[in-house]
Length: 375
Image (cartoon, rainbow, N blue to C red; front, side, top):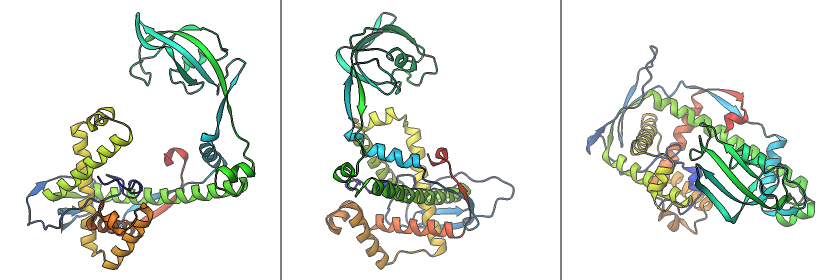
């Protein structure tokens, strides 16, 4: 399983920034698979360059005269405050209050929900905490438990529209019988210098704000750079045609894909990977489409490397291996190489070189990014 070291998820995201490894073959060494990638059909389409690489044959679209916008994101005071709020979540306590509930309070309830005489929710014996404003059971429900006190027993009906986001409730009329057990409000610690130094590993409150802003700015720079390079590479992929790819490449990418899916299923607590597929609507056709995207990406990166004579030296490999070992938390190179192969590492280095080449040869215009574009 290629996820002993979690950091690689950010360094080599499947289908977006990583190239899977495959034993070196020429186009004539192995059985080929026919493949087609999306091709630009504009009248001014630039001529393609046919390249044979270790993974197959590609007709490369133009990759030296690309144009793209680079979004620049500004860190706001709100961004810093949101990060601080996230840091202190574990220190926030719920304090029971003897008053009517309001938005932002947590209301502890027992409830039963019925539809057409059938029970669809039965929490009569089990207490449930609902944060007013989260609208877990809809805005109408939250409105009905606003302005209530411990001991109240509101009974009400909620009509869920057909467009309601929870498909299990969409279009239903549900009768709720509720008992209010208690009302609680958040007790947020005062962010004194002493509290910050003791619990959050910063020297002071001001030091925390300054360093968080610097960290967010660094993250924004990295995101801007990554988004730009990904967009440039996607332009090349869209303008290129994968003529043939090797069975070895397909099998290697498929193995990596399956490992990624299994890892995600484990992380999110699914009993089987099939349950993960169902939950995320990953049909066999969609998984195959993603797999071919992965294959195309890998072979096009390699083809650009071949065309431009980009190679990985032993010195570059050793330097990168040392860096990856340090960043991953592996005890030594041997442990790291039990999970990732030399081909994996060289693939990451080559990809970095190709992305650098695309950016260096592109016309890039900077533009202020928005919160929506950052998401």
